[in-house]
Length: 386
Image (cartoon, rainbow, N blue to C red; front, side):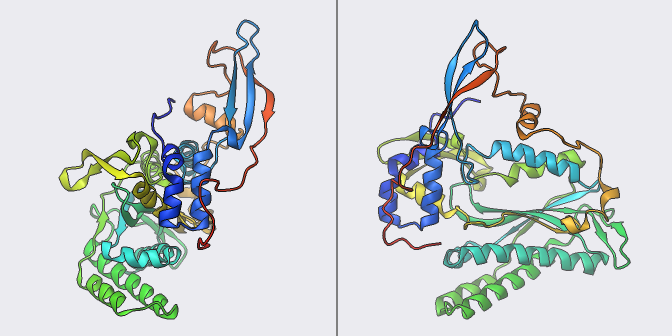
């Protein structure tokens, strides 16, 4: 795969110090940005390889990846492996795609305590889905929920993509198919009202407990109560393979991919985005380098925060009960190494010589990591710890 001409790492290297001085990001954000700008460079170390074909003897250097979940260069492999693992667990029933969104007015509250806000999104979305499963079908249903925090232009737009199976366990412990009637699983308007009430109540109680509740926040919450919230629900998806491939598109995305960055100059960064207000047409947006990094840093999740969660009958505790619903319970009982899996999934063998295509690249020398202070591009004083 060819590398992009412009990368997020290039933006960090060029504008990182200025961003650090102007925006005062917390230490964890600085650590993540530093990892991204070092990814696949000599700073992380690597190895010198040589082709074992005597007729070739090609040599090159390979550098280590950062492995950070916010890195655009480190997510493709994880996405493929995750998709294959979910294929083995997929239930052979209809699935529905439900997206829980919140009004933009709540962004201010989100920035006060993002970890609690995102956790509340998960809790209230699942509580809503679970209650509708019991009230409409009398079963414990399930969901895979994936958090996204960004809009097309890197703005803050927290929302959850949820994949809900048309199956559930009744009080007698029997797994039932509940999706035979109609194109949609639950009435969307009723779900929106219930989700709105649960989330706003939870946020209000938390802010009061933290002594952060103000008149302005009360006005924001009152305004959000008065608005009609939107939950997107799509008709049932296809078979297990299509379901997993569809969800895999969402699981390991980052705020912006390198391919979307079109230009970097002395002051600005230009990137492409889809304008959904204009029939999803591709457009270009130009931001200053500091503003680009400020928006990107908003989407760095709190340390250790889990962004993909499994609920109900899709949780590990229900593994045996739903085993008979799996499309292929014996699929791919894997004994391969991670490298062997990637070769099979991608068709690309990183150990093959890129020149002669027949020899194997043998490690001749290990290159140590360059020892230097963390976050060398940013001043560390007066930063708030996460």
